[in-house]
Amino acid sequence: MKDFVDFDTKNKPRPHVNSLVRLHNDFTLEDRIKAAEDAGWNGFQFPSEMLRGGDLLSDSGTTTLTVEQFAAMVTGDESYGSNWGYFQLLNTMADVFGIDLDEWEIFLFHQGRAAEHALFTQIGGEGLIVPSNNFFDTTRANAENNKIDARDLVDTRVKHDIAHPFKGNINLEKLAELLETETKNIPMVLSTITNNTGGGQPVSMENLRETKKLCDKYNIPFFLDACRFAENAWFVKTREEGYSDADISDIVREEFSYSDGFTISLKKDGLSNMGGLLAIKKTSPLMKKHPNMLENIRDHQILVEGHPTYGGLSGRDLMTLSVGLETVTRQDYLDGRIGQVHEFGRYLKELGIPVLEPFGGHAVYIDIDRFFEGTNIERKDFGGITVTALLLLKGVRLCELGAFAFGTFNPETGEEIFPEHNYIRCAIPRNKYEIQDLYYVADCVKGLYDQRHSLPKAIPVYGKDKTLRHFKARFELK
Ligand SMILES: Cc1ncc(COP(=O)(O)O)c(C=O)c1O
Image 1 (tube, rainbow, N blue to C red):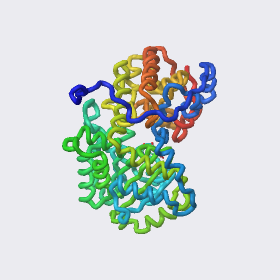
Image 2 (image 1 turned 90 degrees about the horizontal axis):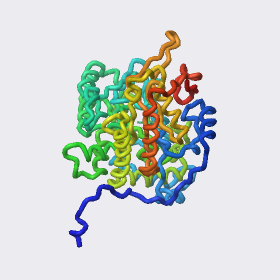
Image 3 (image 1 turned 180 degrees about the vertical axis):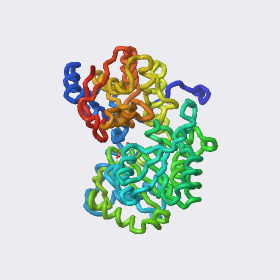
Image 4 (image 1 turned 120 degrees about the vertical axis):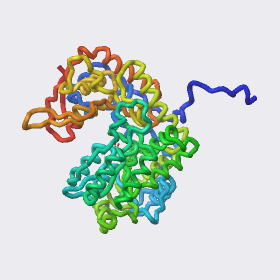
């Protein structure tokens, strides 16, 4: 009998079936136009119930929970102090990250940036530099808010190599040079896995290992921004020599074995809707420079998040996290998850849409400079905003992360300062969509791409001079 089924199939089943679905409400084009105008054509302000195709604004906290998580939620212990779910979560973390709870201090927060805030407030100061492959925007903001020079050292030499397997790597030569010349001014090195700002690109195990070696040489702690630790491990397994037979869970443990500490937004690979974490190794060199650090962070946590055993989260949240962290390292889950992202990217490419390659773990990025090449739309016309704004009318929400989001307005010269990249990010929520939804998104992008020579410009009418302006700005399309 075995021989009859000894063949491969082009399509694979998803790693789950639907147990609960949400039906879309009905809205007309006129409803959406009115809502988009009221929102100043800013996707963040557009009501999500009007989205039909795909809400790819973010993959953060947008995960569809599994029935196992819902079941665990019911058992959540809402006691104010030392609820039992907390201890269960600690044990899960010890197992998933491969850390010894006696050697590590774990701080829970309601989300990633709260953990970053707690960390950088402790280690910040004038003249300090923290090198990274790339800082995520909130991580950068928290570092800079504490006077730290947040220095991106991603390896740009492979920028144009569309087949490079680990475009998220830090440039080790540049790092070595900086550590040598600025040793005293570097409180830590930070690697973001996967590298969200750099296109959701993975970091190789070799790069993590070598970064740790360099840090050890100068007695500098090495931290991870590990929001997508499991997705990164999947890339290591599928792309890095020597790992194809390794278990994802062992790869994850190896990733963390090189770190002296880490922050995680558990809204990503925690497979949960809320949660953040700061973990610090008690033997880290950081402790010598900042002997009161752990105590100070505890105090800060109590002041802003609550008792350390819930850290801004409900007992229910802690239970979903426990189950989520166990699920996220499953091979079938990751195959399905990243396979879906890559199929979406492949289809966009087939339609002729200029996309960043290779595709990342959680998102596909559309290159807006190439999208508008040969048209009269220049960076100052914020074409990425135009595309995201018009897609709202088709019930699709993407996120401009380019000339507007990462650009700044110089009030003295009246000119815009543009970032290196000009992308729209299509971030795919975990377990939420079927590929058909994503094909629809791609078809809508193609519909606008075909009209790229006649699309309107996006004129900011409010907020271009504000910080974090993409969240607040309003536009007119002309
Ligand atoms: C790499 C990275 N670091 C930090 C954060 C911040 O996490 P949070 O949104 O939970 O505050 C994010 C969120 O998207 C992220 O992608």
